Amino acid sequence: MDSARRILMVAPTSFFLDYGCHIRILEECRALQASGLKVRIATYYLGRNLPGLDIVRSRPTPWRPDYEVGSSRHKIVFDALLSWRVLEQAIRWRPDLIHGHLHEGALMGSVVGRLLGIPVVFDLQGSLTGEMLDHGFLKEGTLAYHWWHRLEERIVEMPDAILTSTTHAATLLAESFGRADLVYPLPDSVDLDFFYPTCISSAVRAQERTKLGLPADRRVIVYLGLLADYQGIPQLLQAMAHLREQEVPVSCLVMGFPGVDKYQRAAYSLGLTPGDVVFTGKIPWEQAPAYLALGDIAVAPKLSATEGSGKILNYMAMGLPVVAYDTSASREYLGSLGVYAKPLGDAVSLADALAWSIENPDAARELGTQLRDRAQKHFSWKRTGLQILQVYKGLWKV
Image 1: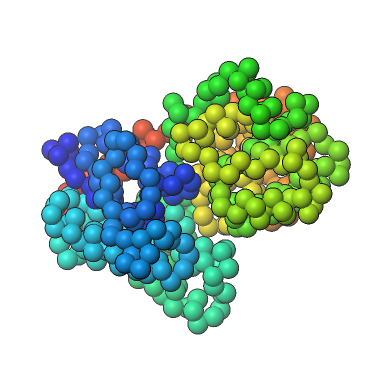
Image 2: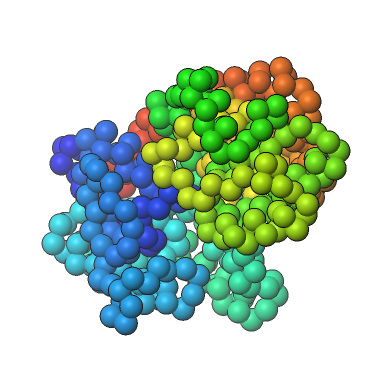
């Protein structure tokens, strides 16, 4: 029976952290548990345990047990240690299916799955080489790019089925890697009972904005996510500087990590004051709705053309109008209801899109209301969990 089925999720990251792919892993796990499946998450040795989740961790690196993995050669060792844990769990726990997140998780899961005859699903959240280009780790046309692209081709061939976080990613798999069979677009979703516009009262909202130093006579733009150049943080700060030059009454609440000091210095070098841009640092996931409720407008200036942007769905669930660059991932979430800046990476166009949202509050508010309705119709985790279960059942019948 499905209630006895066991799913071993492979999460090659320090799960749980309060951003990005961690949210997808968390919500998929909860949705599958709600469907009666037993889910165990194999992940790196550092991370935050959450109630209700069955998590097993790899051993720490012998030379530095507190090392927080990043994009470095140390990740090879982290992945080797996690691979051993995945094999151990597959032998001892005997899962009915392995669900690998990211390319490393798909590779580990596929190798173990082939050894033990277990079906494998790859949860793809963007192109490996595409992300390495976006992050500046590779240059197109180089020998290194060629070999990484070959590795990516091999990885996407191995799993029995692939779930993609955007329709664009599914198209990319077919066009760039020749994989079209058993590929299922499964966009990120959102917990609409967790994110909702009235999660705090208007009185609390006013108090919290004052505590943070947000001027009462200004509209507030909110950003919640990783602070990184590829997330468009430099363009956001440049757009804020442009809005201040135009004397648009607005402040920006920038919530996330790392690099807070770096971006604070960048903001001040652009002439922005602490009242213009407020940096909060890391926001615990449990407090995300209350902080987003402080905003009037949300911004998602991500520069990648291949990665999804799950934060947009949180904004939508909060009933916030959303300003984003015009990418296929943004269009997939927002449809015709987004306020789009283009071309990609242009700070002035981003400022213009934000200015329209500030200067047309009634129209922007109506967009926010429609976006929550769109999230309810198309992007609930309950619906997505049932879709994942159908993919699993198809593999169990083979």
